[in-house]
Amino acid sequence: MTDTTARIERFHKDGIVRVGPVLGEDVVRRLKAGAAALIARFTDHGHVSDDYWSYPVEGEPPVLYRIHNLEKQDWPESELLHSPELVKLAAEFVGEPVVSTVFALVLKEPRRAAGVPWHRDRLQVAPHTVCNLSICLDTAGPENGCLEGVPGSHLLPDEVDVKAVRDAGPRVPVPSQEGDVIVHDVRLVHGSGPNPSDQWRRTIVIEFAHPAISFAS
Picture 1 (cartoon, rainbow, N blue to C red):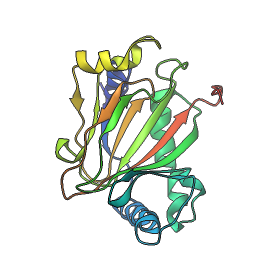
Picture 2: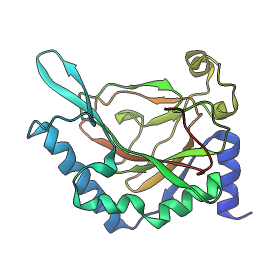
Picture 3: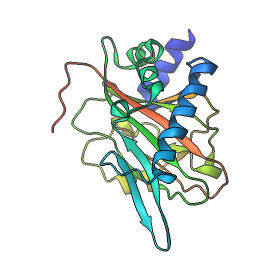
Picture 4: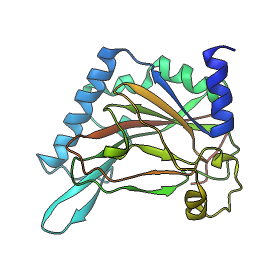
């Protein structure tokens, strides 16, 4: 069995798989620098936009947790989001052809970021037809709020209770190194903890789907 076959089988069974580095070190370095510059627009320069999602903290500056429509932001590294290596990887899991449908930077600021509530990214799509590729820009583990999921939950019906699935488990953390790519089915029940550490957790998330799939507006 090849590595590709093994990870596709695991994706079909568990709905989530860490595939390791996919992009070159220079590309990851440039993406990381671009992410830092985008974040600084908010934290250092007070940039306000509907694409910059934050929540208030009493007596402190707001906490930025997501930059949506990442491909529409003005940053020199944006062309790297369309890397053929990422398209090829997504096609392994959902079949060819694939189109990218969502681009976002998800981040957890050191010492302040809250956890992400457990959820499913999308429903009303069949398992194994839409996936998220998470490009990890920082080393992540439970200590700084790495991704956690319930393996196999992507196969559950749309109407299941997410909290009940989370509590029944097993809740499996997916630690990663800088440059790793994690692939998960958008139906997977997943979430993550807070970041009390002094280390960032920044992830570029790109959703890929078969072009025949149409999403409800």
